Image 1 (cartoon, helix red, strand yellow):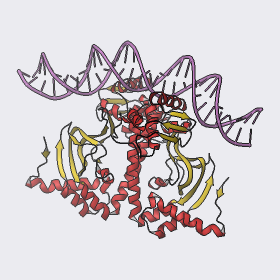
Image 2 (cartoon, helix red, strand yellow; image 1 turned 120 degrees about the vertical axis):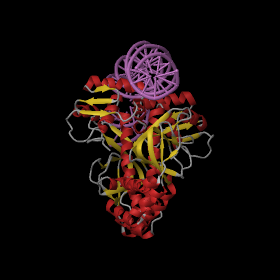
Image 3 (cartoon, protein in one colour; image 1 turned 90 degrees about the horizontal axis):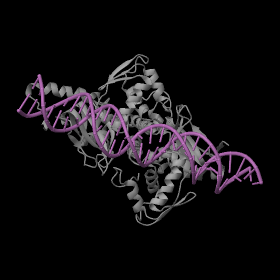
Image 4 (spheres, chains in turn yellow, red, brown, blue; image 1 turned 90 degrees about the vertical axis):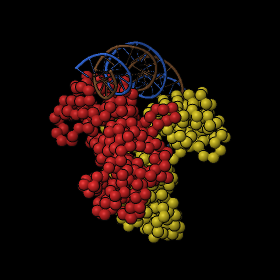
Length: 251
Length: 251
DNA sequence: CGAGGGTTTGAAGTGCATCAAATAGTGTGG
DNA sequence: CCACACTATTTGATGCACTTCAAACCCTCG
């Protein structure tokens, strides 16, 4: 199943061009010279794998970091007894594994593909090389990490002050498009309910029951992975009132 | 009560020298030229305040960041309804408020003194000026923030997988000196039990009862703020077994 | 069609929060 | 140095939220 995407002669150039433009759009490489992005594209390796593939494990020595072209990857910790804590789920255009450069070149978490995913593997060494060279990379990382820190501290707060239905409500609101605050919204859960539950720090059973409560309390409709929210305003009121992020929990 | 520490002529020079050496020891200014540290010392303002003093509030426009010379400061969010979530408690040698430079120059949390504290106020503008000039500052921040990120994600995990007595146990273990893993340890709680409870995401009552449970289960002894741990090894086993941080939760 | 994973439902238990009240501890002014 | 006021901490009783264990259901896919 290990498919290194083949570069046929005819498509070689265009594929490489795609890769460059994709890399240019990633926050990490924002505002870098064309030649640098080009270099990243040249040294990166494209792959594709199915659900279940483990990309790396916590503690493992790190040689690559990853960019998702299309698909989804779960980042998680696991305890000795097998319970796992889901840190985040990443998707198209996201990178992960890059933080190991600050942690003795070891991954601080594990990463597993949860749906068929095309991705690029990029050498850590290249990142280190250019981090010395262009201050911009360090700046990009700082911006991202400080935002990330806000998000994490919001998550800690939510675990403390919100109950299960509220956490789900907040999760749904973050999936909604920002425009049109009062209109009804129809949306698709991006992945397994079980996984969402884990991501929100609750059991699948609790998730199911909490969703039921949201149906009763504010009239959302659920059919499989499709959710219909009659009024985001009332959901916001239900969910966000106990939260210190006075405005919105949007990232 | 607003005491700007006076610089008498005789002590002026030596106070300023102290300030420079203190600033040099702070992670943010590590490995910077003497002249830069000197500049920070010159532009900073020393103050001292009692418990209860609010240094700044979430959302406020930020002009300074802070270095604690001696004392303790609580960083927290608060919701509309008045409940507060304690993000961290900082003490001697720690800085805080510096992250606002990545957040439109606004503080993302509030800060309140919880015991008489001497501190320096340092202009944000100076930090910005030197951040452009010395890449080292950005690097120092990156190192710190990546470690911080680990700590936060550990906290999220703990809220999910540990119960109250275990969270307290972990907190106590992080207070223990690293050496001499099997010897009994005597230690002092660094601040209010109520505040520790808030920091660990539980109510004071729960904290009290959880401490009682630790007394029964592993024989720690509690007398006021003094804790005696007969065996850190057994506390570690009690506390850390469900946790993914295979080694220790030390920062 | 049957297997297997994801999801829901039910019944029972556990842990923490809440409310209320007692107790210990600390700092104050007399 | 003592009595008072105020805060921190403990204790008890009760309720709710989430988990756990068990079983049914549902859906997809070979």
